[in-house]
Length: 547
Length: 82
Image 1: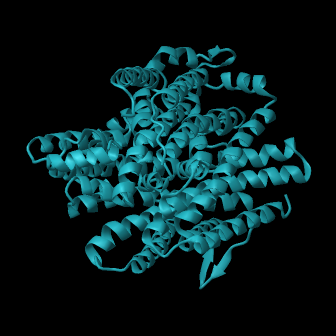
Image 2: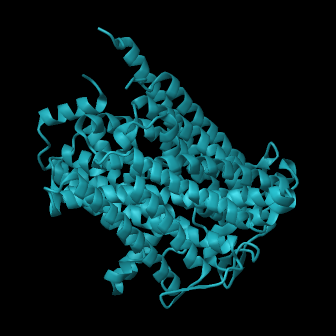
Image 3: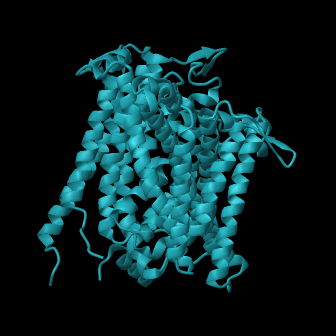
């Protein structure tokens, strides 16, 4: 492909940096402006920034990777998207109304205000945000490394300060530093503007990748004939790995979708929208447009690869075809591998190289658009909910804005370090696939759901109930992660492993946590005092827009 | 007094219940246990309109979900100005 990928990449990166600078020039020196861009984002920006934040590297790497690994059954994951879209209006419009009236910036602002301003509750809500954001940033950074490996396979190692950096490390560092830079400079404005470009790139990348796969396999009829000849396990649920039972898929569609839509980055986008009408239109675009890009676009790449390059089981472990990758963690590379293999044959010459480069840049856009939103949201959460409340309550707006920028730098370096530690320790790979990280992050975020629904719709819970519920939900999700083994040992570890493994096969982890969370929340709320009636009524009026 | 009158609120609530029920049904039949109705046929390489059965099933229930969202957008979701 010559220098085409270099040129396309440079143009794209230059554009992102210029958005950062324009965002900075347009900004005002206030915390609210840095985090919510003056609460005036229109339909195009809101719809695309919500989609781009939602997408992440899993859209073009993780999810098609799972379709390639587990066949047609995993397609049903897409059915969570219409519910996510509906949540933009149903939850988002109430969050928008009350946020505008009361000047909220983070999720904890709303939740703790309703439940009486508890510092403990604020910390727990901030912790949920942190536990969602860090895995998400890690998976975006990893995607940068994978992409660099594919785009520049012959690149030599670099030495810097006595350390050796391979192409994977260089890709992770480049993606994270650049993302960090434009978030630091321009805040929400540049994040949202870059999301618009990245969102357009992503949507077109998904559709073009799907079309290219169908064409490479001889057109739609031939494509579907080849699909129907897949082995039975790949044509049905629970799929070759046995991971996707209908109950699990259904709970993912119900709970993971809502969890993703109330994570801090999305929640802040509801505050930042111009009006309820903006959210209403964004909801429709998201609910109908996005699933089409998956079902008729990028997921077909995973299915096509399943037919052309079937994975094989080696010593009981499923491995991708050598054309796709060499280890169990490389199922994620299916879209990149398929595009590099087939597009140049379909569209020869310079145009083919440009199309391949654009799709690869779309993969990068998917990662950057989520990393930037999450870095920005984490900065808001730690500044508003921790620094402002517990460390320096009298800090000026300017000081808080600079602290927020410091958070972005530290979080980027932490995520980079975690990726590097994972890369250097092949024995410790708790989440080797991008999609595994995605499900853990969503499971933590899901623990906000009972509180958000109660505060916005039901208003029967209590502060004590909310604290006990969210704490138990976080604990349950933690028990499902490999990190629980560090704290448990012996018989307890074994029985717990057995229980979580059985439940994990049956249901979504976030659902298990939310179930315990809700039960504890309801039980404790029965015996403790609700917020005063007047406070509840005023809150309801502000959220529902009844004056 | 502007605003919707009581009968229109009532019919809007009724429609909201109907649409929510259809959406829930799509979630149960699409990715949920309704999949068992077609799973064996899909595993044997069965097709519907020349498309693998499970793929068709996913597209069909997505269409139902999308139709519910469009109906809610047009008929229920409030259109407030800034």
